[in-house]
Image (cartoon, rainbow over all chains, first blue to last red; front, top):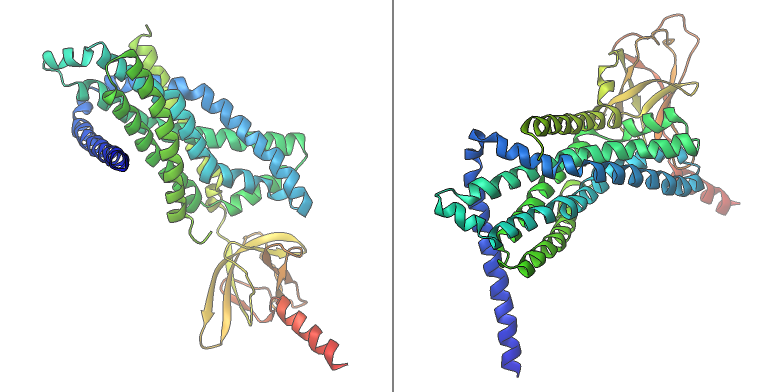
Length: 261
Length: 153
């Protein structure tokens, strides 16, 4: 009984480590295929369209509402200290440093990552990938790498849009609705938000999240069991793993980037 | 099926939007654009204690911002803090005997330098030194003095 329990534990650990190893080898193959994409930019373009452009609506709407809620909540807290002029700083720093990259990546995982997994998984289930191999077309180069690259390019752009729209959302609520002075909203924000420490680190975060989210999405899709149930499981795992990985990485990156702040 | 041309236009718009958002974050939010503000001139002042004054802190006269703190170093010869201020060029008629104080905005606010104009006919120019300074008020010292006064009675 005990031995069986131990065996089960061992099996799951070995399984987990093997999967991690497969994910890394898979990643190497994808990266090796990336330079070849320069000759066929159309493949990447089509994927940026379905991953980035079609995610614009949810990103813009979410960014707007997150910014507006930050404005409302921040105002209610800051007014207690008579510091409602700092609303701009609060909204901009929260968005640029944390909420933009993290919420952006979570939405991206739900909206685009799951779609990527499902698409690749279904291609595998319907044997399109093996068909390509039969015709001496490398499915990694033709199918997987363009999606990965598109995700890595799109997410930082989406996050930048999210943060910028969010700041304007906070501005609308704070200045338009609650009557914070517009001049001090912007000037305090500009004197407290630093280009390198805050904005650049936010961009670095979003690039890391882009790699993580796209990697998980394409790998889970490629690993999916070739059945309809396997595809649905792969999609679920993509969303779950992306969320966990993004939150975990966010903690690590924040610890590295904003030590003294 | 969306045609290639429309896809390319949409992707172009998307990338342009993303770059524009980055630009907004850099210029409008982090205030990069203000590096383009006129250079102005620099003044130097020595303080015994600057408290928690930081670079970029405002320099004010009568509550109006006329410049910012450009640099803070410790002068090991004078045993004093050397504060460099960059004053906007339109405020070029500060009397030579002006006084620089380190004040705190509100009870918990950030510290800034307040200049009090003197009465001299001569004005301060680039790299001139403000002779009369008053250090930051350190709360612990005031509390200490208060306690000494209170117990010595």
